Image 1 (spheres, one colour):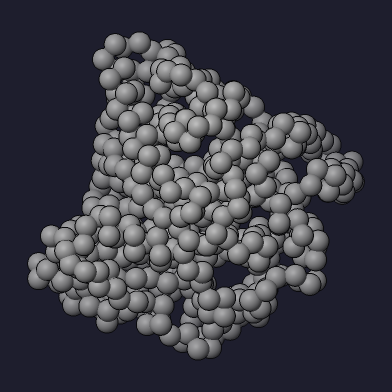
Image 2: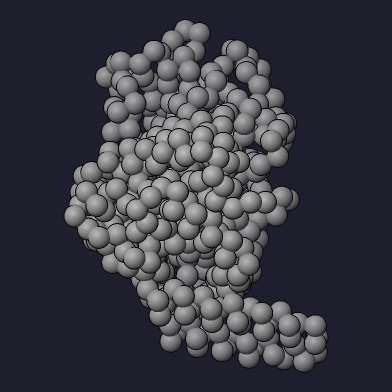
Length: 506
């Protein structure tokens, strides 16, 4: 991928920040918004906290002070785009926002008390229906009070051009602690690194944040093949000087061809999940004990991720049948982001992701058969080269000039590639805290691409797994049916474990 152009460093509020151009990968998310008014390319989460000692949400001033002491860990959050539009002969740059005011990125919301989960979800749907202002740093936070039982919440929204799903978890890191701090006005360690190490200790199970986001692909097949040829021509000269590279080039080339055949020639099926969408969103969440998913995995084989995908397939099958649609014989196709970050890159901003396209066996009648097919699909992907081909295409996209790339972006998320987006993010299994309160729920958000009405983000935290659905409000009025279908599928799989009939051994 083309390296970002680095300009002279600037001094803002006593901190130096590099002025960099967006990469082609980052700019894609701006281009997708420009191409379709229904697409909102921000990611985020709703974090729900238990009641504080005095029954109130943290003071806005305390949140500002807390973030001010830690925001240097994410310097791009003080920067804006040099231009709100893409196109032309160069990407927009990240430049210092000379009018940056942290307080202007924080809003306070009081819901009619006592607000329950439904009321919070309704508000969150409206919050995530609004695009971020491209003339300012592309993030905001809301403090929500008035929840039943004295609880409160934080909602975060960050544009995908700034961070991928790993980065979106990092903004939570500047808010959350691995230990309870009882008094919000108590002196806090201003060093971001100290608090980050607390979070790493909280993730004692060894899992690290993966992706809450979506990946991207090049557009038309002829253009892809032309780009492949150009890239291979460039590499051939290097291969002549370095023969050891020949094998790598050939592997990547074969992987790209396989990917193009699978995802261009054999298109994803057309369903009512893939219609023109508007700008309004609606959310739903289901909770499942992590132990339940592990029990299914232990007795039926596969992985926890297989359980997540199979449960989603069951929910989508129920939705299609209720709409009077015949589930596609070859299944629906889900786009599943894959993390490319090394451990040392976890605090880096920008996008470092690729994707896999996974078939969901919605045509199978029985839950056990759906699960068996899902495990088989996962096994075939493990032995295949789809991830390598996907990554190679993303690398090639970085060599397209901005003027051309702008047009390519309009078909990056075309419905011929996939029907739904599903992300599964393993989070810390030890409790986290903010302003003296324990974090109880995390509802992540993955965005909707044009003509994609359903997206699912799954996040595990402190023994619970949260299935958070983000849908187009008008295209999916039956959201509750989908959410309940996912929960019912998990319950049915749990019942099957008592028969101890493994899908596969090993």
